[in-house]
Length: 329
Image 1 (cartoon, helix red, strand yellow):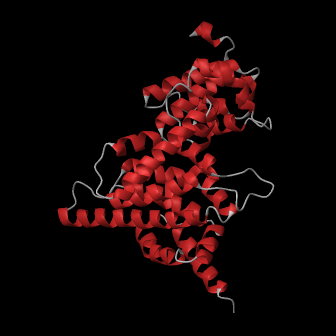
Image 2 (cartoon, helix red, strand yellow):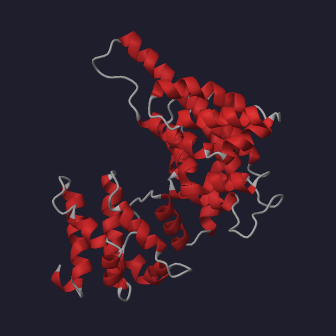
């Protein structure tokens, strides 16, 4: 029998366990994942089985879960916190190991780029900065993504995915701001200091080269909307026609409509604003938004508990329904 067969069997079991939302199940599985990371074959099979997506999802779930409750006893809550940090470290360590296959396999680059999930998970980890060892391994993974190349093993008949793609995702997820905050901290590990400086330079250089439209596009595609100069009347007046997309499929409009249903109320409010501005500035934008279900989704928010979200949802519906909206404000 081939030596690959047991690896495939182990990987299939690991992936099935990583789909669980139970921290204990995941905790008992991670050592097996770390064992797979020890060889290129293991990393390759794990990535090909969708492992990058499941690791990223687990990282985001674990990072957001509270490590203790006010009613819990000191020592037990501390144990839970340490256990949670260790799990974050191990999950991030596995992602970092996988980044060493970026230059070798186009499929691995594609998996890291899919839905921006891996970059999002790593940036959230760096931003929350739970412990120095977790920050170190997350930064190391991000740096590998930021310098990877498609030159040795280019994509076949598909869009080129390399460091530029990942740097764009990092900027959209707010890594520049997080790196700025890390620069103010005192770290004992010189590797962290080096990676922070390297990433800051790579991000800043890439940001200078990006147009405002590219910044906006990355923001929408990663789902990480943040108020700024790309969410204004002036921006949409200038760029509304770009919302068609290269294939005329209005992909960004579809993503915006899906983001109106986001659990993050700020993101939902920004998505409402952007959709409304698209309707105002794009010829026939109102009909397109209606056809894609934007009006119905925005209407579900006009009685929301959050007054700011409620206001943006109401304005969005008004912009979809009324031409010359500015005259009835």
